[in-house]
Amino acid sequence: MPHIKEIMTAAGTLGCAIGIGFVMQSSDAANERYGAASDAAVQERELQALDADTTMLEVQDITLTSADFSIGELGTSVRLPETDIQVIKTAAPEIAAPVPGASPDVVGAECDITANARPMAAAMVNVTLDAPCLPNERVTVHHNGMIFTQTTSRTGALDIAVPALAETAVFVFAFGNGDGAVAQAMVEDIADFNRVVLQWKGDTGFQIHALEFGSDYNGGGHVWSGKPRDIASAITGEGGFMTMNGDLSAADPLLAEVYTFPAAMETAGGAVELSVETEVIAANCGQEIEARSLEMRGTRGIKTKDLSLAVPDCDAIGSFLVLNNLLEDLKVASN
View (cartoon, helix red, strand yellow):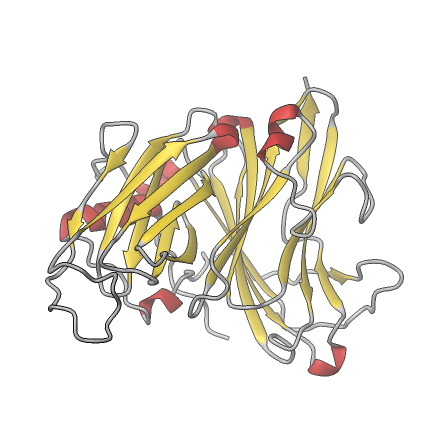
């Protein structure tokens, strides 16, 4: 299966957006969301069953590649906005007068698209978008290698919380018609948290599972999409939390699941075991599915891996594939 194309980094995208007036990717180009990995050797990963009651599946054609890069390697030629929170506006193309039966939200000949970013607790960022001429539209959000798609409201608005992956957090919004906007925020507490991102396209059944400090499945320290916790867990020292960005109901959705854990815990030291699981469902059985992981660990930059996985045939629906070695376990030092 061909490698996925080179992923757009947020800083590079920002430079292009400023330089050429947001001539962003078309809906076809959005499919080319992940890049070919570096020249690192291909590795096969061992798949294990969830527990004694879960069917062990023999899976072949799992391809993993890895590449390490730091933000500094992206170059410094792109001039970033000087303020902590930046709003950049672009004018949408002129629109003809509404025809009978057309959406009542299209009320003018032109409008502006604006975006804002505001830092929140736990190195999260509240990102808002106002695109009154583009209601109910698919929009792709780019941030430091993380890519996901959302849908604007009937008034063309979007209001989401996104885990930051850089202290200077730049967010690029791209519509299928080439319009877009950029927002930036300074995230001062980014070094206080470790993050693991898993991103993919469509309904693949992918999940991140975190077992904190020796917890069993379904135990108090088992964090996953079925038990995600929230920001308060990281602030109070309870542990990590899971977030999901992306609209599964959008056309060709791009999704990003993120596990966040405090870099240092006051009450406990030890490890957090991380795994990626895929349930065999009707939407993925008998197909090859792809994903990309991004791991942010302190000042070491971002580590990426690509995954290509052949899912068993549909007679295995209900079984789980468990990849224990795709993500590096977190080592946590107590204060």
